[in-house]
Image (cartoon, rainbow, N blue to C red; front, side):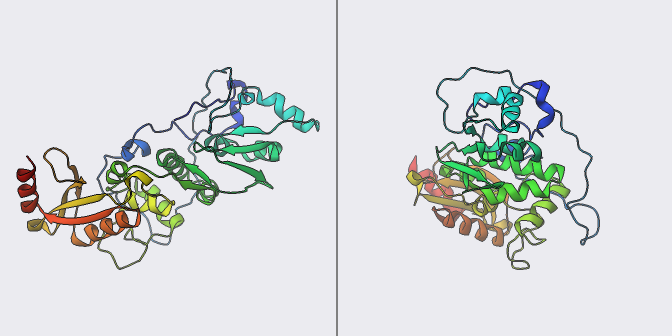
Amino acid sequence: MTKRYIILAFVGFLFVPVGSMAQSADWGDVAGGSDSGMVSEMPKGGANESPWGQTDVQPEVSAKPKQASKDLACGEDDPRYSQLMTVLRTVKEGGDVDPLQTSFSTYVEMNKKVRDMLGSTIFISSPDCSKQFVFDGELTGKVVLPFPELWNLITNALRVGDKEQIDFILAGTTAAPEPANNLISMVQYAPLDGQQLRRLKSIMGYGENGSKEQGESKEKEGVIMLDVYLQLGGMVEYADRGKSVVFVVNNMRELELEKIYLDKVEENKGVGVVIGGGEVVKKISSLLASLGLKPSTISDYDARKRIKANK
């Protein structure tokens, strides 16, 4: 995660923080939810109840010390954010302000009044060095973000029930490509509580069974992280496109998926998962193929034979 400049504490009230950014590919840690691989429980209440109710959650304001800057790296914030009140006064008085390089996360954290005051004096810088400008409150294009950062923004908006913010995030972002190993780590259910899960399904168009095609899947109530990543525009990194992914299933347990191997089935190389059922395995295989990999399925018996042959 690139270093970000945050305004001083005395103007902290102008922002609504969305929490710490994730540093790993462990999606359970990213969301701050339950253990990875677990199916989230459905929320209590009627099916027609809106998941976007009022919330009295009040996040604590955080601030980082002001830092001097030389040349800004892509995706970092302009150091003038540490003197934001001065910038706002200049804008209010009609003075000239050079556009402020702004990370997407910082832009999302601002309240609407500050965004409106800064207006077109902001441009959004992505970690991939692309730039998007703000015109009439809208971005001129999509911002490419690493999936851990994007998922963190989404889950925090889900947590506080801010539908307007999550609509803005989904409309203005695309998930950056990830290596194949990271995609395999997404073969688990989204670690969200019941209310957050309902909100995710509501905003992204999932059916009650966690599938885009209602009634066609035997998945339970969970939403697979790999599916969320694909819906956000994600793809496998170019260097990993076409790599082989091997599913090892236990035929004695209704095709329960036990391990996933990248490239070769070798001892101590597989990633263990606890997610099963023939329909789920087919869905994961389809998702990985859509992301640019080549999945195949073998039994646990055949996997043991391959491991023995590769020793």
